Image (cartoon, rainbow, N blue to C red; front, side, top):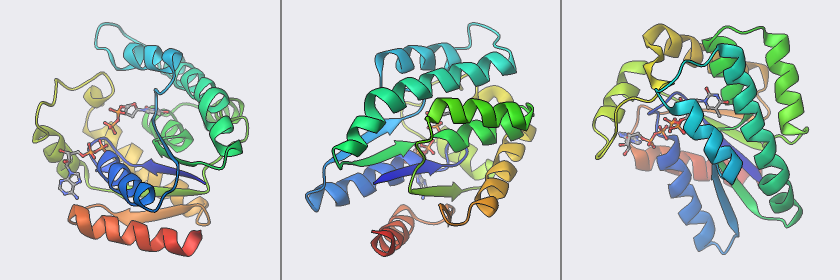
Length: 204
Ligand code: ADP
Ligand code: TYD
């Protein structure tokens, strides 16, 4: 079973992912948790490049770097874990590229689709939870995160960018209602968590 979490930065994805992991592990399931970009040595190195404020990265280079990080992760971790029957919880996956590079950076959607097909090798999540939160609320949450660092390169993209990304997620979810579940992320952590657990009970 492959489950991904999507949403704008600060929407509460990581929080929900770890709450769900605890429940699944308590049930005795073997769970692999992954963050994108990341999880393999190469993908973590690419993550550092992508999030660093040290250099300018063109939108197309950004698309290709996120895609490179992803395909390494798919081949090295996701495909083997799926073969072994493990549950994979992914903090972002291919929909992030459609939302951020497609809708956010406004790259050609056909190019984005082609990159996504190459990078995923056709491996798609069974369920994707889109945690939908307004930009202001997400910003506020990030500001109040203990030990939170300076905004990274992506987080500096500005309000208009994040509004396009959020709208992009709404569109993507609407186009694929079988895989996507839209979650109202403005509520308390526990309430959201209970909804996710209940929804999964119906899927598996
Ligand atoms: P993301 O992974 O989407 O960037 P996080 O899970 O790291 O988001 O959450 C961002 C911040 O908001 C953290 O400080 C987290 O504790 C807090 N947070 C997460 N979910 C909620 C919620 N439902 N209500 C209020 N704050 C939340
Ligand atoms: P991260 O800190 O993991 O996200 P979050 O703040 O939500 O916890 O940073 C990853 C950043 O990269 C985030 O701004 C979203 C962006 N991103 C893309 O633009 N495209 C992608 O394909 C992926 C996976 C992430």
